[in-house]
Amino acid sequence: AQTVTQSQPEMSVQEAETVTLSCTYDTSENNYYLFWYKQPPSRQMILVIRQEAYKQQNATENRFSVNFQKAAKSFSLKISDSQLGDTAMYFCAFGGATSGTYKYIFGTGTRLKVLA
Amino acid sequence: DAGITQSPRHKVTETGTPVTLRCHQTENHRYMYWYRQDPGHGLRLIHYSYGVKDTDKGEVSDGYSVSRSKTEDFLLTLESATSSQTSVYFCAISAPGTGTTSGANVLTFGAGSRLTVL
Image 1 (spheres, rainbow over the protein chains, first blue to last red):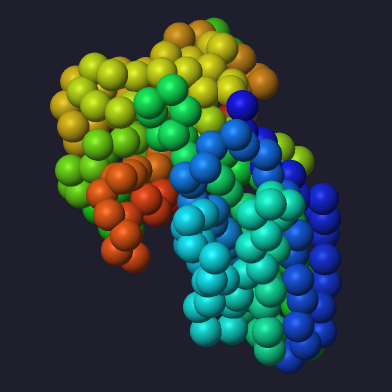
Image 2 (cartoon, chains in turn cyan, red; image 1 turned 180 degrees about the vertical axis):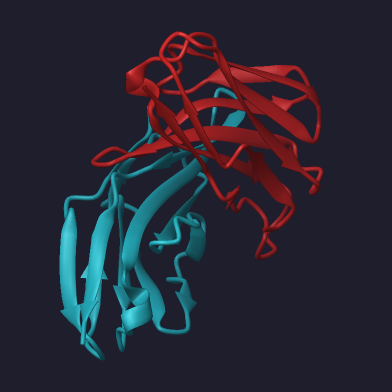
């Protein structure tokens, strides 16, 4: 069974600084997707970034980038030039097929606070 | 939000009563999911559906049942609610395997339903 582990329950960063959130996962599948979702206090789940496992190039979305290490099963999120609006809960997620059906498994989340 | 709505958004009920949460989508996506979110546990999969009348259990399915009689609707039922089922419930949809466009394989969420069981 697939698992996703986020080992940092809480983190803080000064505004305009860079922060990296860690995520590791376990799977025996070769084709899958990895995601980072953001959940602000509004409770809405917002997709931050997506990575296809078959792509070696790390995904980037503006100030957000990932470090995808497939062999190590590691998928960290780097937030550059942190802004107050980045304060949120961040979830790492794995999406892949198991026994012919597609499931998404989430980590327990990292609460990020950006300090002014 | 991306054509997915959950109802009710808030519900307070008493132990032992049945509760049904509804998820409705207008995206015609094949897959629909129900998750619960609890502090310290992240999002845990309850049940999911990969087509009309095709459903399967997730990691925390005990005490829950689901039904999908139409592509657009996915119902989550608590037959006899317990206090341990107090949570925020999220419905989500996806269209996996539909290509490599930016939307393919992405899980899109509803706004969530907060359920309190007294």
